[in-house]
Amino acid sequence: MEAETMSMERESVIELTDVTISAGERYEIGLDDATLFLAKGEAAVVVVPRTGLSTPLADLCCGLELPDAGTVRFLGRSWDERSNDQVVRDRGRIGRIWPDPAWVGNLDIDENILLSQQHHTRRSEAELREEALILARSFGLDDLPHTRPAWTPEAIRRKAQWVRALMGTPALLLLDYPDDTVNEIDHTRLVETVEGARTRGTSVIWITARRDLDLTDQSGAVHQAELTGSNLTWRPEENTILETTKEKSCE
Image (tube, rainbow, N blue to C red; front, side, top):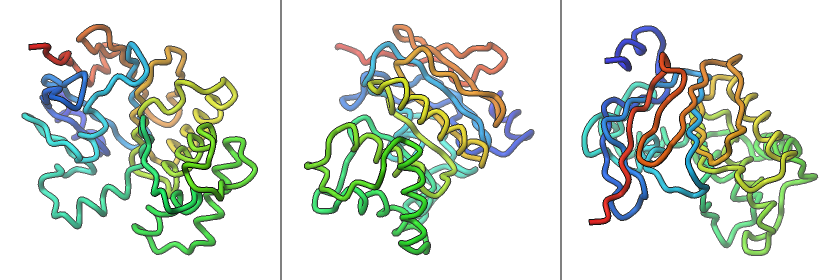
């Protein structure tokens, strides 16, 4: 198998091997015999027909869904080989930007940003706040938001989610439509910050409806795909890593 050949050459961060999962009720797209391999610093860009098209790809990568067939490995181990404690710990090494982000309503946005790192690491609050503030300023914010999520403008919540996902140099970034509705200045800011994370070894899966997303090859291979109808085709052909998807049946 192609993924097996690649794994002998370089250590994988995220790997899907012959994965099939039906769309079911949660998703609009399922995967059929899909194979994916990303090493440190590599990125996969998946271009879909419209913003918000729901796929199981990110949920599979962080173990929230298990495939109907095939194997998903994060840092060399499948999710069903881990204990519950190991699953929680290893999910702490994944940064994620959700299409519909969840916030703890009775905490301010800045407290939400720090929460995962406070749970998974022993870093001091002062250190975490310093990193969060640097990230916030890279996205054009003057300070961390100190308001409840419900009282914080959507545009600021979006950037706060970017900060939260990038905290602590994650091993893997899962980006579900992170910037499909932002202006070009903020789009560029996000791309530059993600590229910086890749230079430190973070692997990236970026799902987007934008056709102008351009990540560099300087930090590792960048695989690009386009979803048209029910087929996902990777370019260039020699870097084919994800084969086909299936539209949800209307039966």
